[in-house]
Image (tube, rainbow, N blue to C red):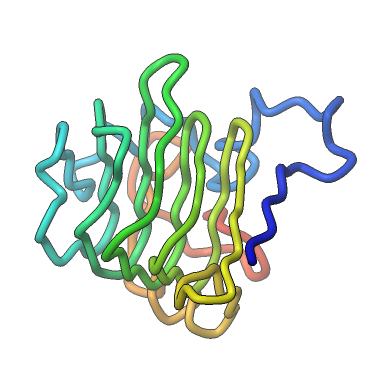
Length: 165
């Protein structure tokens, strides 16, 4: 028996255009081009242990076979739905630019943010899920340096947010 749910609940009129900036306090371009960001294309993430900030462009629809911790940004192609399913285990924040579908035995500890539509399928027989854990999330990202939105060096983190001063 499975349940399928489409999110966001009651957020259909919410603007997603500023979600990345609201989440990180910097633009997509600033994170994507930062020297501390690992940029991967296509299936280069597969069978790798990811850490720090990882940005995946042009991913296959079936996003599978990866593990790691930190911040994972998945930039879907226009009209593409990223299927986060088999053999994924990630601790930290997964941020999907586009649509996402989550099923199967994937385990995500921390948080998952989706800029588009998201579908979560819960199956009684599966072992996967999103396990929101603010402490694990904080531990997974504690040593990550985000680019400063102002010219100059990196600023200190602002308590209770992803932002830096």
